[in-house]
Length: 107
Image 1 (cartoon, rainbow, N blue to C red):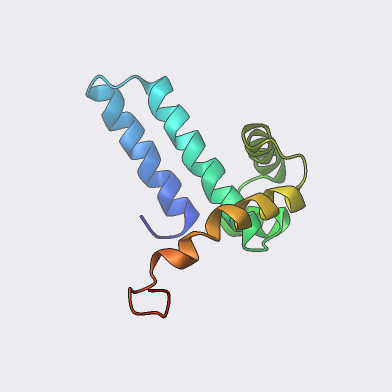
Image 2: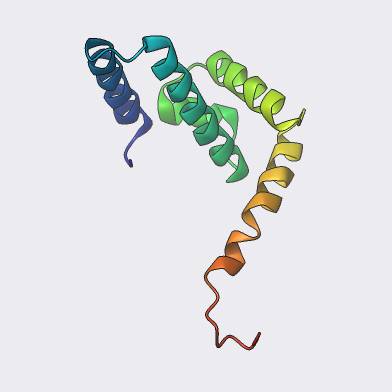
């Protein structure tokens, strides 16, 4: 799903209301949404954006983003943004090789 973060949040709120109506536990849905937002934040940090930039772009409070970032740190075993960026760059590096064709000289 692409689009501005406000549109994404609005869409997720609509989905939450529908999931509750269809019997999906709201706490489960909210947990999934939280993981999505944490992954989005980690990606933005890895791309070089600051928390201030992200807060302005999303219309979110910096404290909200700090809480999400702390959750990302806990889940990744990192303690600083630089450590998170390094970890994510290591995870992304193998993806650069996934698109190599068989006749790229490595036969």
